[in-house]
Amino acid sequence: MAPMKLYGSTLSWNVTRCVSVLEEAGGEYEIVPLDFSKGEHKSPDHLSRNPFGQVPALQDGDLCLWESRAICKYVCRKNKPELLKEGDLKESAMVDVWLEVESNQYTPALNPILFQCLIRPMMFGAPPDQKVVEENLEKLKKVLEVYEARLTKCKYLAGDYISVADLSHVAGTVCLGATPHASVFDAYPHVKAWWTDLMARPSSQKVASLMKPPA
Ligand SMILES: N[C@@H](CCC(=O)N[C@@H](CSO)C(=O)NCC(=O)O)C(=O)O
Image (cartoon, rainbow, N blue to C red; front, side, top):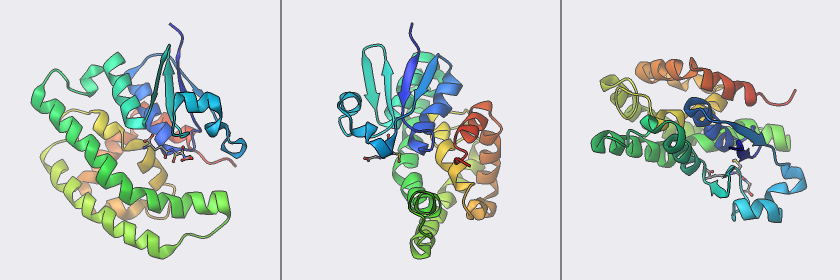
């Protein structure tokens, strides 16, 4: 079977969200970078993989997927279904809840911080808009309060088992570590322990190595 192809730059945390799961679930894959500066993500070839002209996209044989979390769930179903807990109705429901929480609560607060602190300086040579950073740090803190309460009760977000919901946080949180605001976790000891546990995984170390900004 030909390896799965993951299209996109590993500077994108939506792309490396999929790397965490590809590394954890196993299975042969290769990363096919697309050069945004040349508009390769808007080429007819890529639009045939992702009609929105975004990254990531995943090609597996004649199957083309996009949306990073859908890609993650596909890879889990294919190679490591226990990361979805689909054999258990209640456990799989909690995996779904916390994957949605990452997508709709955690990442919407995190993305503006990453854009201001990493993308703006690196891509546009502009300083962060501190007002935007502060506003979204406050939003993130409210989310982390919920995470702290949850992780006081169980080791991982969906329960006492790691799942795709935890792994979906890795890429963006690695990027948070590259900003001056990584210390936001310090006020939430169970969140910090959860993150330390996740970062110790070889899959997370791989993501961190791929996301080092170009020298
Ligand atoms: N919900 C989607 C987001 C993809 C996305 O925004 N991709 C960005 C790069 S990563 O920040 C992208 O492709 N931007 C180019 C564009 O939107 O034209 C997912 O999770 O896969």
